[in-house]
Length: 218
Ligand SMILES: Nc1ncnc2c1ncn2[C@@H]1O[C@H](COP(=O)(O)OP(=O)(O)O)[C@@H](O)[C@H]1O
Ligand SMILES: [Mg+2]
View 1 (cartoon, helix red, strand yellow):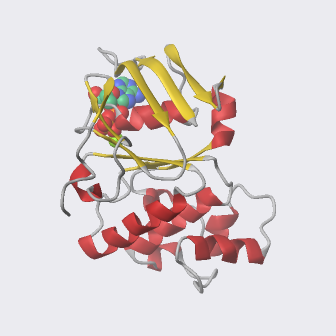
View 2: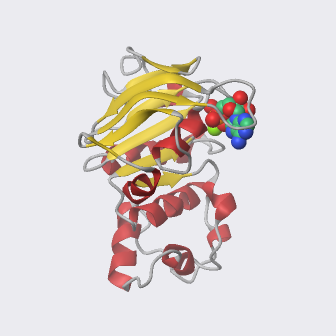
């Protein structure tokens, strides 16, 4: 269980705080969702959770224990918005190996299977993959670290509807044995996929429960 307790954050160069007492409890087993308009602080929230930034107030706890930024970097895997823009490997295999001292081919195959890319050639260039495959590859790179908390920034942005559905389907599976948090400015796409009590809105620096998302028709 991941708990955010009254987080306060203001970027050094920003005129106003982004978070003003944001609190949240996330559990594994089902996807959690934070919705908010552009500029509301969604990406900032993920950066704080995964230890790329430190809040000026409040606490981030895992299983009841407050964690420092360095510990959170171990705990969490963050998939950036448009992760395919950050691919560094010349091949799928190289991309998977970044940050891994050694990667047995069985492990690479297992993680590709986990994201529905089974049978994909490790020699393939990442930029030759389809948009949906590239998102899955970015997920696979994080899954290799086996993070207890998986954070996804706008995972459906820029995908067309057919591919989007595949990615959404995958989120349910990946949340089964880890905390999975999605932030998005288009929560309607997730209707029917997020259980009651697992969605919030980020408004004026605070997180408020967003009931009803699970009831809407897709
Ligand atoms: N490094 C930074 N320095 C100054 N302001 C920032 C910085 N990062 C984000 N902001 C500001 O913080 C607010 C929240 O940004 P962000 O977390 O990117 O929102 P979202 O992801 O919801 O679109 C915005 O007003 C943005 O301009
Ligand atoms: Mg953002």
